[in-house]
Amino acid sequence: MSAGQTPPAAADAPNVPSDESNADAIASPEAASRERISLLRIIEAGSWAATIIALVFTGWQIFQWREDRKADLSLEMVARFSDLEYAGRARRQLAQFWWENSDDLAKVTAVDGGIPPAQRRNFLDLLFQRQPAPQRQMQFAAVSEMANFFDQVELCIATKRCDAQIATDYFCGYAANFADLYQGPLTQVRTTFGTAGLGTGLQNFVEARCDD
Image 1 (spheres, rainbow, N blue to C red):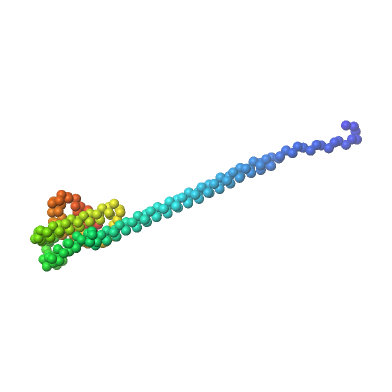
Image 2 (spheres, rainbow, N blue to C red):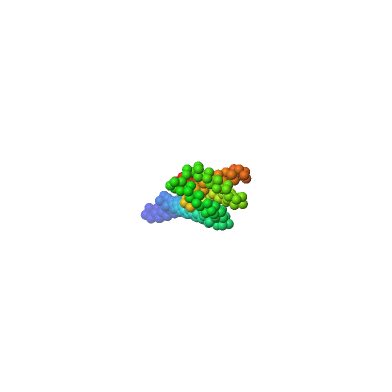
């Protein structure tokens, strides 16, 4: 280059990205990825929460259905207790026995002046034996049917198919008196027909649920 000549302009430097722009370019996809992961985690957490809520609600519905079903079955047993196609027929038969012997029974079952329980049961056994044979057989059949009914009540409660509170509130009074007064006839039914287990549920029901 000769003196006095203007040096040529320097060529523009190639378009090389700076370190700052490189960092932005790298960081931008990473940030987007993190946002997507966070969003997915939020969605997943919400899905789990919704699933848990649904399971809890379903469990509550099943529990409520079972409780309602237990109450329904207990009320069915109550209906059978009075239904003449079921236990109501046996109750009527036993009630007729009491009506026919009301004067004698009133003396031995009186709260004041009555005789001790063991003697009362013996007296009741004698009254049973004093009945004419056809009536006596009907009375024994009624005792068997009532014992079987209370066996079913206890089984329904023990298997958690019946509501214990409804059953005890409704049946305890009659069941306790029946188990006490009809021990003799029930024993004879067991011996005659070989049904040693008859009345076991009745006894469990009275002893475990009707203490008071």
